[in-house]
Length: 427
Image (cartoon, rainbow, N blue to C red):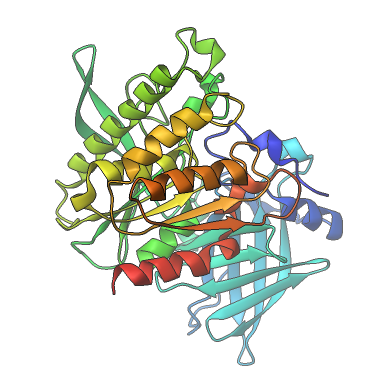
């Protein structure tokens, strides 16, 4: 059953998510199990007899938690692994009322081969691989959904009322130089730390917009990207996802180019839209300055990345501070979508500003993007290079109709390109 991606447009949390087509397949294919007694773990269920065999030498053994596509909570408990690599596994997944299925758990068989494990049930499979961070990279089936799983203590998890850290990231409030109404503004930032005490080079990943900008409920959703963070952690980066003013749990007003009547959402007026971009740059500058005060971050250049509006922001920030940025990864970047007749004027103004960064960037765009067509993004790239910028541009096919804006949600589409680009930065 295909998922309607257009329902995702406008959601900050779901901008990088292809929500759980895997769960629909799973629940159609496998009857839900039940037990006389079950353990509730932060809304999910495990059988009452869940246990981890003592003394297992395999690093897979134990309890793992994560979020499919950054949203749907899941637990994987590897109870035992025999000498032949056959594993007994409990898989639990949260309810998704929007898709009409309830929370459930399944006891399954897995097989371990080196740093990989395959868990199979009737009609579906989960492929897991260790990353160098010690986390598991999980892929459902043939690549419908993705998750990063972090190890947790099972005994602590099953305590009544236990709170679970479902993401490897940690949310904190950054004290910044920003003020509104003479009050200091904190910016919520989600940090993903690599192994070791550091100091580590800093990578910043910027969130996008909220679709049309006319739903205030979406402003309060915090966005991060577990998989991209893990890729960067693996290479030693401390990864930060700052939520700009009025977004997530950040203080201040969200005012990135909205109409004077905020119920109308984002403005197509170039002056108003570009003023919103300048405000976002100000927030990003403030977040980086605050992060620079940490002992676990180096004083060297920052790697910039972002998705959608955040991809454009990453590029423009590099143009403003070329000596302070090591590289830029731009996923489907733009400031205003083509629903605005002024989008070319606005977006090309910004890419000209970005062109002051003279080292190569990586630009990744999706075909059949409802926000930014390939013709539009190629024109942005041409304007950028004509102004003196350098970017390796890729147009990527995303399966399904109208799904091109979700490139970042599908790691196999970009892993090789991103890793090659990161290699080039260290050459």
